[in-house]
Image (cartoon, rainbow, N blue to C red; front, side):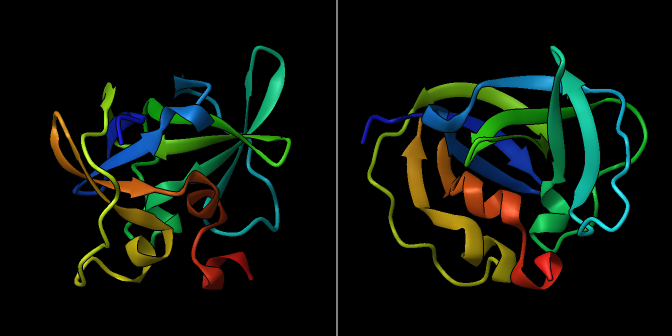
Length: 144
């Protein structure tokens, strides 16, 4: 409870991500494809001379892919010593969670069930608290 979270949007869902795992939110302009990478791995980009692996979180969840044109917003995080940029549709605000995570009710779909820690109350209303590491990994079928 009272953990700081970034409220953002992926698809049509309001999502919370723990700020403990977030370095920044950036705009991604240039993407270099990685041949043979899983579908949810869009490629690489650079941030202050550091390579970031770009993850299309929509594809990682089994949703329609992010719009390929134009500028993209992304959450920058480190997972097991590697830097990632997780594409999001919109970044809203950082606020405190007002409750402990409650179990995720059914009906959200397999992708959300795989990455959600639970539902937390925030100043912005109920939000799906997601595990950033699982979100970056994508659905098991995508990683194969």
